Image 1 (cartoon, one colour):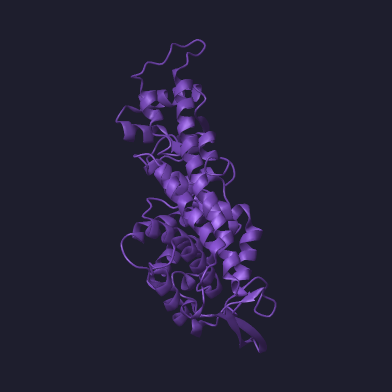
Image 2 (cartoon, one colour; image 1 turned 30 degrees about the horizontal axis):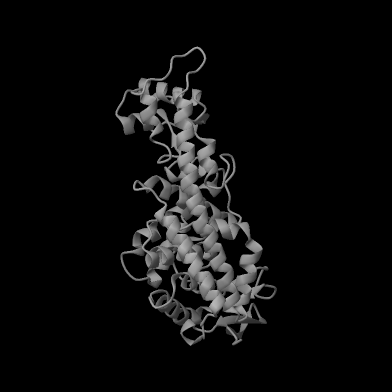
Length: 387
């Protein structure tokens, strides 16, 4: 097993320490054994089957998958917020907790990267753009946002003197990033092992002052979408979040030179994400049938809802919209506000939606009543209360 890097001496506030500089990927023997190759092939097949399960009108489910991915990636770093606040922050409502805006920014970075995945090759500037989007609203000083770090970095501890890992000094970053980008842009490597190795190398380089883990997981999504021609990535971060210990151990193994065991762990996580995508498609289809049955069923003291009632059209707004309000229904369906509110009450009466407080109105007047489906939000891997 060849060493994956070397230690170099650094000075930190008058004291000596050592930093780890990984070997360039172009200089590493990254061949895979038969078992590892078989696992990456199974992972790719699972992702492709998950993609094939997506319906023709895939936009709503794609958004659900991205939401699950962004929320999970943030939670790995300990950044969590009520999922309703996250969705509101995505819509531009910044009255919620700051963490909600940070999670929403993570979702925006994933979305931005996917828009670029089929447009061209990866560049260092791409990584910096994603970082700038990701760190929107964060407490990170502006001078560190969207730029490669110019200061010494480390992982764990309070300084390089007691850190779990001291990352490469700034002068090594240009060469390491150029090598990483060249590897990511290759097409002769299978997509799953490429995503695994690129992510692990990115984490060792740690090119930014903050947010490296989340940008590194955006890179996973970018590679899988680009190489497998996907419309949306499988929710790999949800599998990582379910086994953070295995994830951290795998990255340590990669640093120690054992890239195969890391790739095998990662391939299994991707396989699980592919299966999760298939399960989400099935769950949404089953949920939709259950909603229609509830809405069609007669309720005590009320007539059976007519098939041309506005409530049926409003129901079609789910899951494309994770939150509904009267004004949103008006805008989408082109009906009067009174009819929109009546439709929402019908859906609440059927047990599909629940009222979840109010949010300020964009124009003078009463606050908008907010309606959510706990069942739908639960499919993102979070409860409506806590992401």
